[in-house]
Image (cartoon, rainbow, N blue to C red; front, side):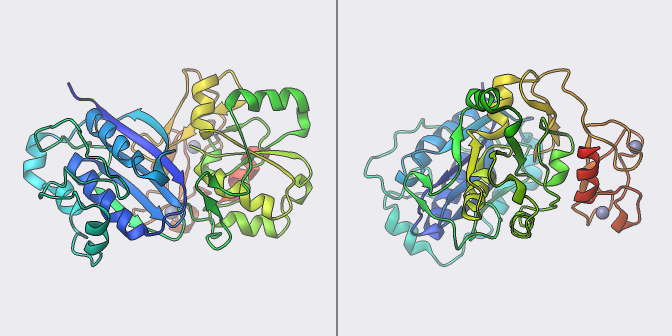
Length: 369
Ligand SMILES: [Zn+2]
Ligand SMILES: [Zn+2]
């Protein structure tokens, strides 16, 4: 029996040849029928892919055999289902898109790095550094493909998360250098128990994500994208927090790896980050800890609750009614997301002629009000 599973993972470590890693990862995923998005940078890897349970296990085992990815931070979740045989025969979209950038020039890098690669399936692909053979379960191709991602995308970028701090970010074999102190979910509660209101939670996500769920009393920066944080910090918006204990948090932890280092670099003196982010904290404490509301996610679900009865902290961007439903602006070209009640779920943002205020400032007003 196969189950649809989704992996969310990252590792910070110096990558000498991101392009070679990209080619290896694309081959590996293609050979296992995995779909999703992977970014490789000189600082590491960040990805979310899904497929059959056994394929995900093989993917993790092989990826961790590459030294820099040995400490991959991984979260598992259950996918919606698999593409049917009929759909697959009809479109072949997954395989076609996975192979669409196959003709690029760096084949020598991967053949030099992975001499074991052979066969059209790529199933015998080896990690770049490994001298060991891989005795993965032999499975008849093709693997089933998950419906939660339309295709496979593997890209090289300057940054794993786009804070615009690529030139100052330092990583070594242990991860980001100079980042905030990692706290387990239990240690977060202990810090608050010990230091009380002195502790500040700092939301490292885009404002719309914070609109439906956040830590109690959190500071929610007025940013629409990750790129906005550094500007807000540098214009002094959070200067009064620089000498307080600040707990940064984001969905799975990767954004705070970078953000916490950037804050320490800019004069904050006591910065923490949560191991595994909100996801791990929510798994540990559900609705009974310091987290309130729903968690925004980046697949078809839009948001999730850690337990039934999560607080509804969001406010409709049109009528202010309580809601934790996140929607996309009804203009198909718009990427704005905002909270909407049942009635206003099909609304457009102000920029697109609608009455939904999708601005970060509106979220901040709703949070503080
Ligand atoms: Zn409404
Ligand atoms: Zn819009």
